[in-house]
Structures are given as C-alpha cells and as structure tokens.
Length: 235
Image (tube, rainbow, N blue to C red):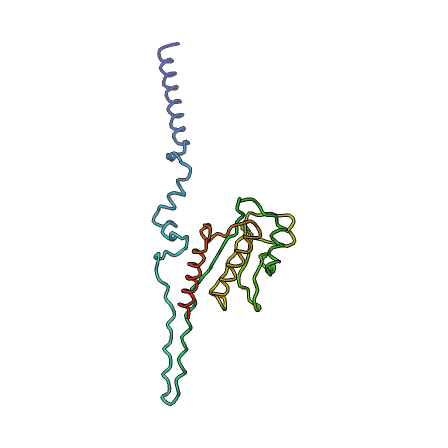
C-alpha cells in the first residue's frame, strides 16, 4: 500500500467516526435528574405545607378550628310581661320544710368464740322474736305497717333466706335502723337494742356497737341519749 492510499484510509475512518458520534448525540433523549425518594415524603409535605389540612382541624378533630373553653351563646330570654295593676299577684310559694338530719343506728350480734351459727338456729330465734322475712332477704321488725329495723347476715351480701336456712351458717348478725324515717325513733331504738340483747342471749353471742366493740350497759345508755338528743333537734 502506497503512502497516498494509507492517508486516504485514515481520513475515511475519521470521517465515519465523526458521523457516528454526531448521530449518537442527536438520538440521545435528555434525562432529568431525580432526587432519591423517601417513603412518606409526599404525605409529610402535604400536611406541613401552606395549603395542607393541618390548619383545618382543631385538637378535637373538628373541621373548623375553635377556641377551647369558649362559652356557647345561649338564646336570649324575653322579659316577663308587666303585670296588670288590677290583677292580683299569685301567692308566694310556701317554703319547704327542712329535711331531717339522717340518723342510722347499727348493732352487731357476734358469737362469743367467733364460731359459725347454724342457719336453722338463727331463723328459729328470729321467728321467736316476732321478726318477719322481708323482700330484700333480710328479717324486719314491722309495727303498724311500718318497718322499724332490719336484721341481716353479717357476711356479704347479708341475705337471710328462709329457703336456705339449712344450708348456711354465719358468725353473726347485723341489726340496723333508719331513725329519720321512723314515726317514733326512740321507741324504734329501744326495740332494736332489746332485740339485739335477746338474740345475743339465745345464740351465746355478744352485742357490739357500730365500731365492733362490746356494748355494755353504760354504752347503751349513752347511745340512747344521743338518739334522744337527735330526736329533740328534729322537733
């Protein structure tokens, strides 16, 4: 190959390479660079942006913001019409009588040794003292159609069901009276105390006050004096 032929071959190769490079540049589509995407970016931007829903909800999730603790406007109440001078005014309502001060007396009858007393014995003694089963599964002292006091099982729920007399036992009984509803509170207390004493005697038990302390004669007198003082204050 002569020097002229070699030169023509080199020029031809250069020309072909140049044409190919230009053609490649023309056919290549421009690409847009994208930043790496993090899951949740769009949602976070929507909530925090100026047009987001964050400013359209209050702390209670209501669509219109409101002030916490804002008082609700009440409808105006029209003034009462003026009374006709010739019309007699209605009489003033009589004042209601003051309600009685609450007074509850409770006593307990507990077996001396803390042993359980058979249900049959308890029911038998309650009937012997003239007490009657009540609707609340307790025994009651009824006088003239009024319940003076109740006798209940010392154990919760306090039931003394005659139908279960042979299937239960308890170490003691609870006696209680609501004196503020009694027609004769002092007589009710005397009957309550007498019944508790007689039950204790028949059941080999002891009478306790509301603090579960033995109720001696002086304690019983003091308790009666308190009931009498309360009764006099209600008059």
